[in-house]
Length: 291
Image: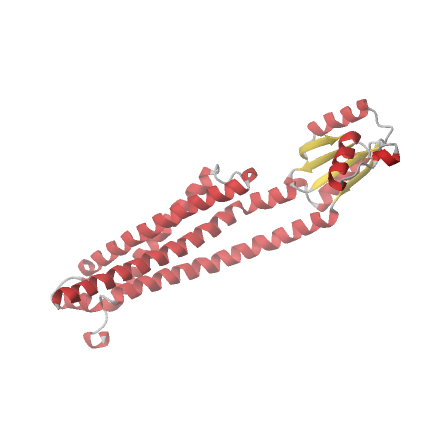
């Protein structure tokens, strides 16, 4: 009977440890993932803004000299991230690839203009600034038209501000919930040992002596949970970096260090504080109240 009871107790203890580690891992992983998103939210928003193209179309009278001069001007412009020159011939070829038919055969001419597809730097993708850039470009008499999605620019700026605000709110709420969940798991773990705590106290052990093994055990569990969360976050970072290499998330070592270090620190601090107060509660209870 005794070995059977000991095996039962051991299995129950392992199950308790496993649930604590799993809770810490899941909570810290989700918290870390949210932290990565918050830190890189500006990069994400900037990447989205810089993907909004501005197309500048030239009149047929614009010769190679004028086009080259405009290209030189773009290279020296502070607002330009990158640009591509699309000749009339390239535009016709692209149109043929999309439509599947060669319209030049029945038109007998190429009506498409020479153009530049420009991507602006994120700080210039704002309604007022982009309108000023449009006006400056139109001062060139050979420019026939400047086209960009004005509505998308307005929506991007408005929604990014709203999203940033709600991300901060959600992050704060989630951080609080995370602490409560980890605290709850550790309190249940200490609760299962309440009689051992009271027995040690009754034979004369000091409170600090009783707390020490419980705190160290919780810190070890916190380290295991944090370690698993860190491994999962590194894997997530490289996965996202593979999907969006232009963001350079995996190469941002400082942000990675802050998030992973924060996950490790939170895992240790929360387990220490939670276990300290959980054991303190049972140390202050009368023996009759344990039942």
